[in-house]
Image (cartoon, rainbow over all chains, first blue to last red):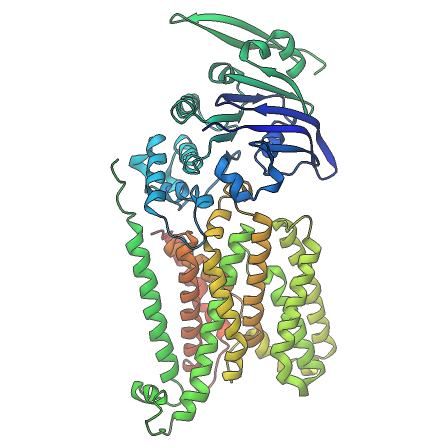
Length: 266
Length: 335
């Protein structure tokens, strides 16, 4: 089922420091959205506000047209799941234990795991391909496997919106690609709306349907890959001279982006 | 779809819990039956039978040994649970009841009574309890900032403990002639504990144990970090506040009847975690059982080793428990 999520004139702040003065944005169909922008531009803050982790100073986040501030965390957790950046679990949690945590919003406080819960957990583990490692402890997994276990936990929430904060940051190129392909497959199979903060522009270009560029706490550009990824906009966004070119690979056109030179001022 | 099979640890964990409960029972029987006067199991059972003739050891069993052992078990449970909760909520392995000000507050309050109003000694448990909660309240107040920030709480706890510790030192220096009377209480122990003390601590144990069981799933989710827990629907600030209050009550009731018994609240949670893992649904009940067993056994040993002289149970626990804990740590037992 498709969900609508929207931000209306959000003002976001940490304590006294305003990070984003005015942000408005809408997500209304299952698509893969990449949020890009320089460090400290407010990408992660935006993601946290959208997922109800932090409250906006002003403005509203609307989930299915209703103000998210009026929802309990538990209710929100049934609609959208978020994978925080660099999340860590106790090393002796088994993969299964972690994924079972994803059922928390659906369970009563005392209720044991129902057969339905177990089915969802096993399905989630299968979706990320960790069946063989279900009872392995988190501390013994590689970075890529850990990240997939966390992804399975988010899937066990059975939400329709999945938010990821830099899901590939600590992974090598093999596991980065594996992770992105997995996210893409999950989007297709489960009709998920995926909203993720990305640093790697070529990953954003290749896997996202829509890119949102954030600069100084404002939406700088928002649209499909071709609209956002232009030499001029990247120069303004990052202060970097990019070579953006189209290559033809196996009959498919694809944009690539090469950071060429730093140009000041940023 | 094919099932993933059964978690191989479930059986083991249940056995450990069961074994712990069995061990606790043995410890309790041992604690009641040994001492200056030995009594046998039959006499203990007779104590609980209305029809039976009251034996000559009835007074010893019913009014001295049983309350003492019970107080020990309840104190052990409370301290261990408080430690489990605090280490989980604050995500800090060094967290123990001392860190939220409980120990320092109880210590200063009790010492003030023992030194300044020695004729009011019977008030010590209640005053210590109030002191513990007052210090905890102060720590809360100092660390409050849109909810409780764990790091601020720990730092505020250290500061408050240092302040109250200063108060204790001052009392000791200015009344050095009366320090003797406080030494035993400061070291912690169960000498002369009666049914009255059982009644004082029992309600908190009941509330604490049920609260901790109720919250164990929240503890599991908090283990994933604040953001992940929020994302999973946990109202983190509210849960954290409630859990710390619960831990404060558990620890305050324990120190008020047993004195400053350190060690249990810090080491038992770690020991249990090494044996059973950090899944709170198993960790909480096991820590409670292990804490009770450890304190009862240590108290029994403290009475017996240098009979008729009793050594403070806290000293014994530190001497035996710390090396055992280090041994487990080196072995890295993780079942």
